[in-house]
Length: 170
Length: 307
Image 1 (tube, rainbow over the protein chains, first blue to last red):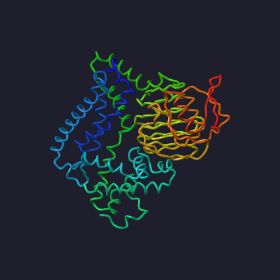
Image 2 (cartoon, rainbow over the protein chains, first blue to last red):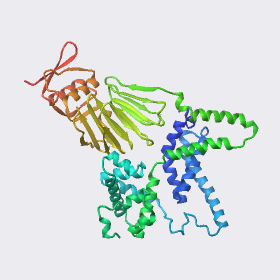
Image 3 (tube, helix red, strand yellow):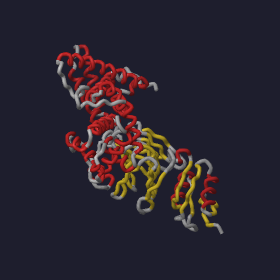
Image 4 (cartoon, rainbow over the protein chains, first blue to last red):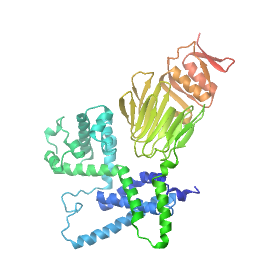
């Protein structure tokens, strides 16, 4: 533990930290911004800041640093956005709550999704996870599972319908 | 909520929409507005559940390098900056080339070893096992070669592969056990998802699923209710396994040699033996199999069927 200060400055360790926290930091930011692109930007910015401070942040303080930084970046963005909004009153950005495109996503909904995924039949769950979590194309999945693309699509379609029924109205 | 024709087996528009193959407008033709809102939330939600991948990480790396260049700095910092930039280059670009070559880790009789790989993935090796990987290409190519038995806890990230003589295992998720000795090959998934490739066929295992192949026979499916392989806790378990592989495991754990001329070593054994007491282990296995054992001069264990 003596050398723990230097450890973050190692690319391999930095990447491990990224893999460990990136998802949770992104979720944390998303629930504030309700904007996926913005959440992604802030996430990237947060890790750039961590790298810049890698010799000053001890390993045990990484999590706190990430959340504090992400929150500050969010507040900056929020202030800036309000300034912009006031300037151009008729702004109709993609994440404008009045726009019909906008969907609001709460933490509880994520928990429901996780539960619904766990409850899916095995054959559907593996397709669903490979498609949505591993970002594999249906053609790739069909190759791995040794079934037709059509069959993969059917399982995916069924999985989505079942999840709709399980989770119900939102 | 749903129109009846939606139950048609051939309909896959939800799958197509998720993959971006049909537009929002096309999907909206098939379903109610409520459903449409739901699926948009589901798409967004699953995106949030996903661990950001290499695309995000390389975007971060790019920002780091470009910011390092772009910042106008006072003169006195320039030397420091150059040093920092140089070390950055060293770290980011040259890191993998500094350490090169294959790394091999092996265990001998009755030994177990826990090792941490470069990305903090953990591997526990059972006795008489050899594992090797290439440090240099690890970042792009998480691949290990295995002979013996090992339990893997893999950090999420790019694909992790275990290559063996008997087939390969590709990891999509996290915890699994691979046993590959002689012509015995067995993979059990404990967490996440694992893809096993053997003889041109691929099979995906979910937690609790196990698959094995003995002596060139087709793959057999099975179930495991354990949370970890039993050998980690000092016990080897077998479920209807030919005796010859059980003897191989006894040899690995206790550094023994068996004389099997008099017995049928293809008989199947179900049960387990501990790794801490040789005599108890031997009598457990051989009583069950109705086999007598005795030591000869060369410390060879001679096996005979019951009279």
